[in-house]
Image 1 (cartoon, rainbow, N blue to C red):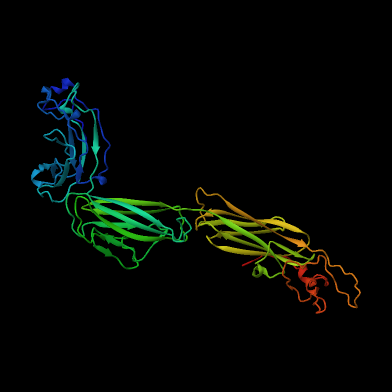
Image 2 (image 1 turned 60 degrees about the vertical axis):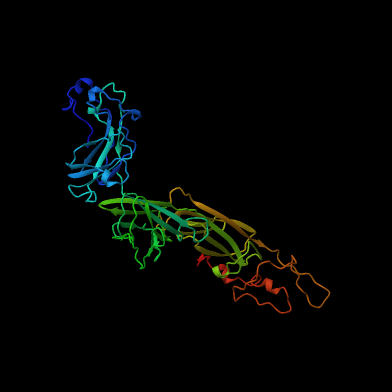
Length: 485
């Protein structure tokens, strides 16, 4: 549709001398967004709505008008005061396809007018026909120097008989203060009938497409209308998928509102930073899309605890201590326990201790996942070293999460050599060894080799010397290896 006219108007040829006005335009509306109805916003006929008579415009006091073009042959109805009184409608019969119908009001003000189109001779409730509309200065109604004219114009937006908005409410199921995997989302699709008339049951189609990273909570969908009316839906399938559902109750016009409510669970392996949910409502040939985007909270964190214990029992003994004391050559086991304490996956995870040395890696560490590694060794010197864990925040598929950087943590533990036991003679007939220092080692004694000498009942300190004073211990000569369970 275009508002342009020829330089000379067949009804007013003298306007060619006065200079008609063409300097306004408007953005076009795609045909698939057109509707059968429009509501005029601000639609004055002239400046300050004070339309003075000018001899050159043949009594056409309005300088601005509404222009309507249908996509097919139709009848156009105008409710100038938008009161819904059919007897007050003005009918323009047999308007041809793409014709620019010019409409003005007798009070020179088109503000608030309702205009709709139906198939020819079908009446006000007949099948609808889409229209495009604009408001602006009509060149043939004005000329240069006309102080009553409004030198502007604008598109009239399509008016949808229904409006829909989709809201989401995030429910923190695990109480971590974050919205992420395993949490719940409650969606509410609010549909409003902003049209003039009531809509019968089954006339409206509501569809929705779930994000691939959520699962529908079976049985959670309800359709609520004002008052006590409520429709519930059973079955494991998502009712709004595919062909969707229709309104189970009549829909009151001029502001009637219905709510469609359902819940979903965010999957454990959610692989994106936002949950996007799309849907639509369709009525009388017009489809209105809606969408909702919910950003997830991603916090990456990792923790490591390094300990050591006397003996060699792999990870089974890894409730170790911060520092283990023992004799030079005593067997010990270093333990490294890591845990993903964030709500993201971590990829390319590495655990290292340069002084031992120790290195370990894994591809992916899930939220709340723990791994424990052990390293058999022997006490050879006083030693305290630091272990470090590193990981890169990712989705379950290993893709990096934008905006999150590598996380790391450290923990240290050590071993300490006790002084070798010394013996001094006493006056008694039996020599009793006296260890130095006099206190027993803090670590629990663990016998790791059957070749170690057995303690004698008469020697109360012999147990602490187990595996220390014997001949070469074959276990000490074994190659050290990392054990991980």
